[in-house]
Image 1 (cartoon, one colour):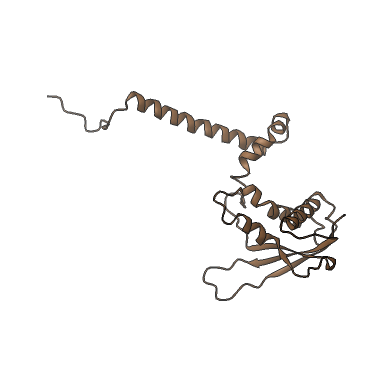
Image 2 (tube, rainbow, N blue to C red):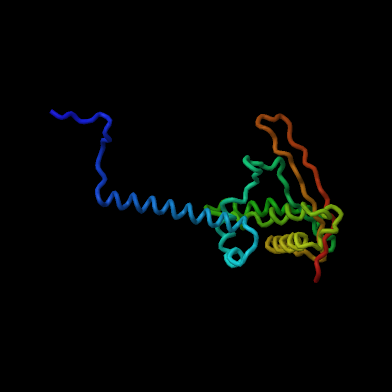
Length: 200
């Protein structure tokens, strides 16, 4: 009498439809992996015709998923919250600081599926400008990051119903992120970026 091999695989044999679905699933995963590998290559490769031609497609694929604060193999989260504040010129009748970062965050706070790219426009513009060598003394305002931050700021002020008038003062309020259980409030520090003119 033949005995069944105890080491033989057991279970329900895959039917024709299950085999087809399994093959489709495996093929889909492999295709997605190949697309991701190709996009990753094009995003990091030196400029060449194919990369330039597909640049918009590559950025659309990569940016919503991977623009995180990472070092080589570990996440590098920010240690402080930075808020961009502006104060309109006296001629505009405004002497209070307007927190543009808070306004940008409130715009997407109750959105079910906000665009990560759109919600970070102000943050990215500010970070790129702050990294410029002449950001502190104002000499970097004519640079591309400086002009971009200027335009983003003016657009946001207008969206909020403020007239930029002849210009605005700009500063960044940085508040350290407290460790869990901290018993004292964090004291904000300020970086003054001077007065920015708005051309009529």
